[in-house]
Amino acid sequence: MELTYYGQSCFSVTIKGKKILFDPFITPNELAKDIDVSSIEADYILVSHGHQDHVYDLVDIAKRTGAKVVTNFEIMSWLGDQGIENVHPMNHGGKWDFEFGTVKYVNAIHSSMLPDGSNGGNPGGFVIMSDEGNFYFAGDTALTVDMQLIPRIAKLDFALLPIGDNFTMGVDDAIVAADFIDCQKIMGVHYDTFGFIEIDHEEAKRKFKEAGLELHLLDIGETRDL
Ligand code: NI
Ligand code: MN
Image (cartoon, rainbow, N blue to C red; front, top):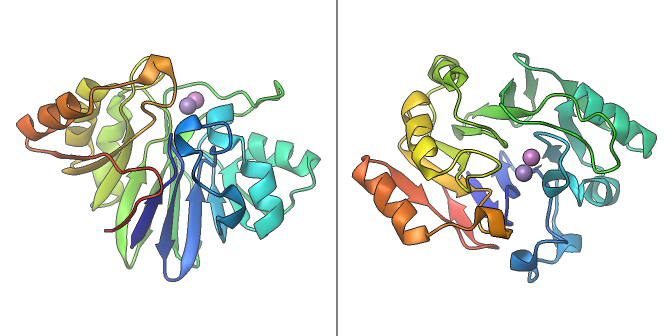
């Protein structure tokens, strides 16, 4: 499985030749100014919640690529109002088999309003299960004991956890989350994009290492084979 990081909580994975983009927010991100949004391909776009730093480029990329958007029912309705009909609605606890693998929509503790004030439903995360590996994208969330259910869903190969603090978990809580989800390999997301969530990279990596975990902080635009 190949993973490319686009900053904040936006990344894409390729599974079975299908490109799956998550939480598209690139254009307003100063740190991602070298990313050409118009060159990003997608067969699927998974959206965790309605906040601008997760959906800013969603409508444009969905229209250009024709990708199927997988998200909660309320965000689906909002997309419909903007002429995007290729959408698969989900809600918490549900799973569905797509051509690249199975997606389960799981709990997140956060809020979810769309940029125009529309109802963004309740925020979620995704567990992706595929022949090429399993992973968990937590979305924006606090540390929650609900994460202890994740090992019952899948044995994870890696997870993407927010580590920027203030709006989501910070590093210390993400280390507890890694224990809850029984996963050693963590990709940090949702950090550095704006002042409230700037972190000390070396300190974060050291804390994870001391806990017997790996914290990977990818460069924006970097692709990893996982
Ligand atoms: Ni958010
Ligand atoms: Mn956010």
